[in-house]
Length: 80
Ligand SMILES: [Zn+2]
Image (tube, rainbow, N blue to C red; front, side, top):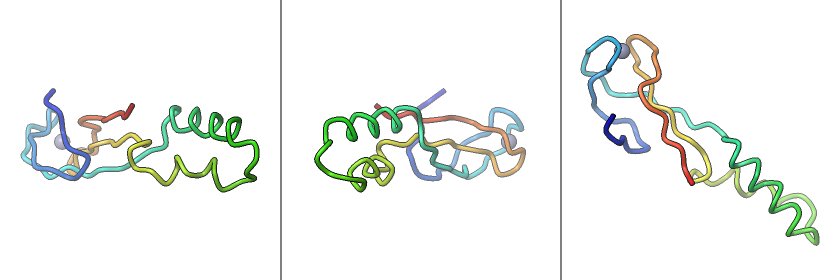
């Protein structure tokens, strides 16, 4: 499977063999939670706010490419 970008792109669906533009969805991964906890532990001085930073960063999330025709997940890009 070739690497897909984190934005919708044209590709051939391996399930239905059609040329489609992928639908993407970003999901918060377990890494995001880990970073959240670490930020909370390290930044003990600051209340709230800080530990929410990872959730605002796209690079902390995983991106899933889906086929709009058959709804199958073509590829999931995990960060970090
Ligand atoms: Zn498909």
